[in-house]
Image 1 (cartoon, rainbow, N blue to C red):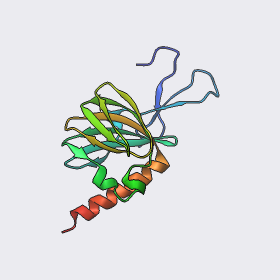
Image 2: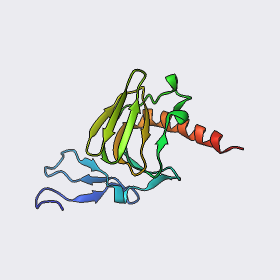
Image 3: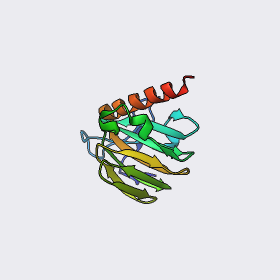
Length: 155
């Protein structure tokens, strides 16, 4: 709920899950927001559910992992076989292991994180996260994942 005088939430567009908080002062910038419950599902497969939307030049993902999964095989076609997109986020449930060329890092429930380019993530079943990524770089990663999924589904 918005405190009195602080503005109200209004839809940016009728079909958009992104909301913008009206600025208190006339002419001030508005703040884009997104919520898991109102963000549409963009991928729902056996392994995971992903709800995503764009906030200006960033994509926000609300991800739920259904089964233990390592993305490394799906990222193999990218430079160095690793995701080249940086990500910022919060792991709200579960555990994720992120592998870099020279080390691994474990992210657990309650951790905020920054994943620089050059990583491959793996997550345990039940893991949930909210992640922010530059939209243009994320599109390259998502294209590689889609290509790998398509190749894996062929007999």
